[in-house]
Length: 125
Image (cartoon, rainbow, N blue to C red; front, side, top):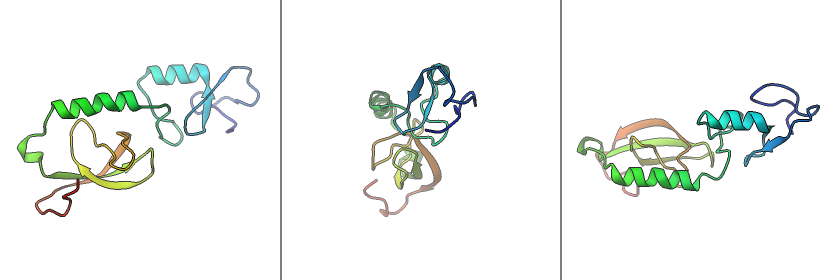
């Protein structure tokens, strides 16, 4: 257990306030978690992994991707991404809604680069 809350930076070991454990193993004060997540954050402030099970949210993003096809100019665009949840890089089809990790299914990704795929080099993407 880390010694200070990553949100308020107060000691957690001496605090009587309830703690909230995150999926990644980090923790914070429960009240800090509530305040932090109400602001729209869904990643751990320390390691950037998803704080909770994001299946439902990621399913909504899947639906948004299906409903909003990319314009022709972007059909062959490939993004190289780093997934914050599985800590792996991969090449995926670019979409402005988000880039989904093809290894673990997470949208908690960061784009490292983007290229037009004029060859079939990324045929499996």
